[in-house]
Image (cartoon, rainbow, N blue to C red; front, side, top):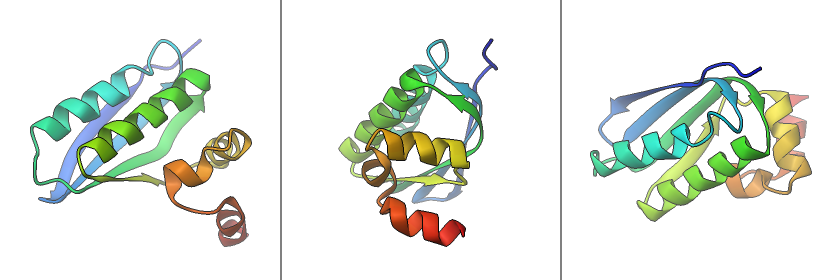
Length: 117
């Protein structure tokens, strides 16, 4: 059973968007995230950094991972940089296991593991 997904967009600075994601990022909810970010970026041409706060993501399946990859594409196509902030260990493991960690975070998996120690 999935938990409803909520995404809250704020702009702490004119060049930065913060998106707090809460709930399960899975098959029935995943399409919401790239759409929201794409729509908001289109209305905020000054944004250069999109900070996705992942702390509230309870579960992320392959559809959720696909949504994160689509978000990355939407953000980079808009000339912005995506940051995945406050990731839980389960999300880091999923990214590492699927070989998407460095692509989505810009970090090497080993460096992140050492930083968490």
